[in-house]
Length: 317
Image 1 (cartoon, rainbow, N blue to C red):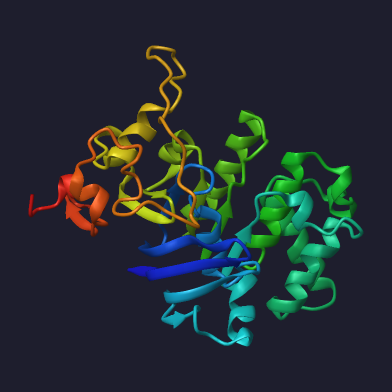
Image 2 (image 1 turned 180 degrees about the vertical axis):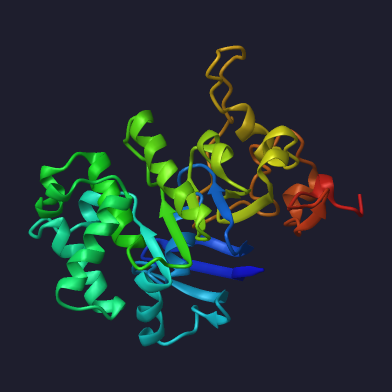
């Protein structure tokens, strides 16, 4: 059963130098209890997609078209009072850099207590009990409850951010590059926290440029390129038999920990989203591009149980 359904979402940034089409016609569904990862290169629109779900796109960006239906409510059109109620209570959000998302002038314990007081309906001693339980859930000792963000390590700050995002046990947790700048040991411990949350029924949307990380934990993966989703499917299928040329190159460019294969890379650069290429946005870098790829944008097609946008896989070819 679907928890989140996004249809034809378009999110543009209106800058003095032109319109940046950061998210341009994205459609996807996240099921209850599912771990869904969005992967792609930097600048592909992943973070904008994540922010749009909670209607938190920073100016000069705005949602210009589409639906974001969460629990049968279209958040793209909902009044601010509804969105504010959903944020924190029903949808938790872990930002990329906890040092900038946490208030440096307040203890981390007071910040998690504020979330409970604003959205949880608790008061007094009960608030502190719930807050400290949330700290324990993410592996933080009680003494850290009274620390300021600068007194904690990067991994500890990220655990605080996760505790704040999940203290009210939301139905959906969105994590935007939550392991950036963390070492691999801390990275794994953060992923294990998410896994425990998922095992209790919480849906996870992970935004990451790390395909290897996504492949280890996700149920399904969506591959994003230049503001569009080019392939969506079960994780094993995406990794073992990628269909879209971009997905194929992305998989090949993933470092091999055993060193059995040469390090590959995707030639060229991602396009400028103020002036994207005509037709398929990947065609300037695609080794299989033909004239129709340069002329017409491909439409999403179901191929082997996956959603793929590529002329080479179109049933009419």
